[in-house]
Each structure stands twice: as C-alpha cells, then as structure tokens.
Image 1: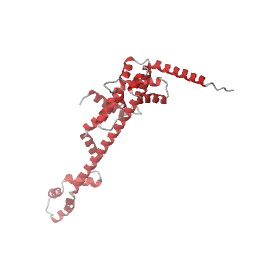
Image 2: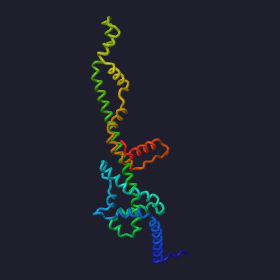
Image 3: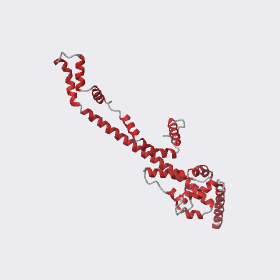
Image 4: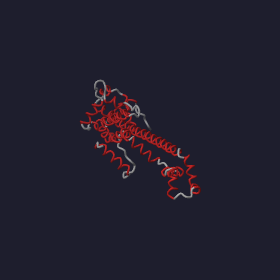
Length: 279
C-alpha cells in the first residue's frame, strides 16, 4: 500500500531540502577569495546613481567603432570574474536552467534590491549573471568581427570590379588602332623597301608593345589580376581594418578545432604584436 503524506509533511520536506541546498551553495560561495568578492560587491555598488551592473546590462547598439570599443570595455571589466566563474559555477553542481535562473534574477533585479539580499545570495546571483553575460559579450564581438569582415571583403570586391572595368575601358580606347595594326601586316607588300627594324617600329608606332600584350591578355582572360587588386585595396584600408579588428582580436580568445593549425599561430603572432604596441 502507498500512503500519501500529509501536506504539512511535504511542506516540511521541501523546507529542509531547500535549506540543505542553500547551505551547500553558501558554503562554496563563502570560499571565494576576498578580492574577487569585493569586485562582485563593487559591481552592484551605487556610484552617483549609476552602477557597474547597469553598464554591464546594456546591449551593443550597433557595429560602429564606438559601440565596439564600449563592448570590449564591458568585457574587460568582468574578465577576471568570469575566469572565477568558469571554475566556480560548474563546482556548484547546478543544472544549466538553474544557472540561467539565478543569472536572470540579477538581470531583472535593481542593484538596490540585490544589495538587500544576504551576501552569499548576492554573490550567487552575480556569478551566474556574469558567467552568461561575458559569453554574450564574446558572441557580440565575434558577430561584429564577422560583420566587418563581410563589409571589407565586399568593398574589396567592388573596388576590384571597378578597377577591372576601368582597365577594360582603357583598352577599348585602343581598339580603333587594333584595326590599323592588323592592316600593318600588308604594309610590307606595299612598301617592300622597308627594313625589318623599320617594319617592326611601324607596328609599335600604331600600337605600343605593352598595349599589344594587354589586349592579348584581355582576349585570353588573363589581363587583369582581381585578387591582387583586392589586396591592394585591403592594404590601403589597413588603418580602418586595424581599428575594427585589433580590439576584437585582443579581447576574444579565438580557438580552432585543431590545436596545431597554422591559423592559431597567426592569431597568436598578431596578438603578441598588438600587445607589444609596436608600429
């Protein structure tokens, strides 16, 4: 036989369970180093009507340089705390939903309301909030990276297309001379007294050698190097590219699924160069 316990018994059971779980979490939270605990408190401290929490809550407005730098600045503010969260939050043995729930309370509560909670509860909510918020910052920065990359690649393609059209138009101006140049072969029949050198020079006078080669390359489809022109454009935009990509490269710990991939070495080389602040 199964006998259902009374409502009071179930209520007492839940009360003891919640208390046990709260004590377990508080015991772990109280082991946080004092300097990091102080950083958590500073996050919700009222500073002339504005708290760091309110700043961290702000979403990235757009992909402008100002918004990008502000997002990087917010990420740097909580980076040390996030490193703590990476090891501490898993040790809490909470489900992902529970971590999101505690973090959402810090997202919803005002800083003044958070300050009224017990210190361990404050720390728990803030740790879960920072754990998710820092990851959102990284997602935003990577999205910005992808956005600006598409912009620069698109601009490079447009520039190369425009230069190719300009190159073709320049050669088209020489096409009237091309007909005259083709008639040049019969010149030797009408003027048999021309020497070999005079005959060649007459052809070059009609259509210079470099123009002949350029028109031939155009006909063969090898006359214009669009890829090289793209890279010329990227080089001309080096300052803009560095302005948008450098902050992201320094703020985001990019990884690749292959540890020994050459792209990882390149990223590390770039980061070390930017950190050194050399030209």
